[in-house]
Length: 317
Image 1 (cartoon, rainbow, N blue to C red):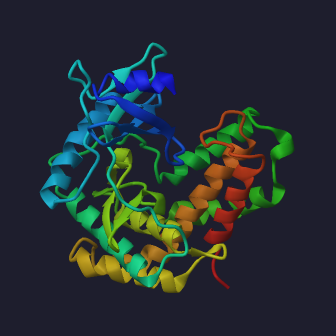
Image 2 (spheres, rainbow, N blue to C red; image 1 turned 60 degrees about the vertical axis):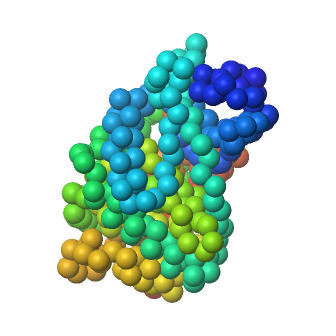
């Protein structure tokens, strides 16, 4: 990891004791960096295509909001040149920040943990509504089902796919379900985290300390955020567990106050199905596409994920 060590020295002069891969993200390459006198840091390589101006704009907005709410957040270090990003000779961009200590839990979650998840998401939403400006969507297609439907159709029409990877049953499911899913309308005027999955929720002493991976902060739908959190935290036997969902929502509502509009939660079951359908479509599209967005961790991984999310999107009998 000599190359990453050299990058880290652009941000800190401390002696670096170790650099190891960290996390399981789909987007950035992340490393845990231990120093001799300044503690532990996270160093990330960011995709070349990402808009650094937008990332910095959003960072300054949510940093102020999280500080005002008393919630920890990744505090970016500056380079020796006073910038938030370092660009290496290959054109890759890097950033570094102190590790926020906390515990990432695994499924299944206890009732206490589910309740705490709901509370933590609501506190995050409250903080984000106090942004002193509108964030620039770094991932403008996030939760935009039409975008992913258009990508899927475009790949089929262009022939940029592997014919032997196609699955007739899944394609029929997409054909039959896409109209209903696209017809669902939600309020997209609030500020959201964008990716409140279990891996982005840090616990400490039984409570949610904070939500991390804030590059997805954007204007969008609170229901999409809640549904995505439920999709990740309340999964059981290939379905969304209604009892777990109930507990998480109780935690959310215990903190949320007037965050949600009157009767807005009535749409949530449909939004949960839509979120799962969207993920199923994204993973299936990648499983056949010649140019992929997700990583194929092992042969058949993308197809497995697609089938799992389509199953979660079906109406309960």
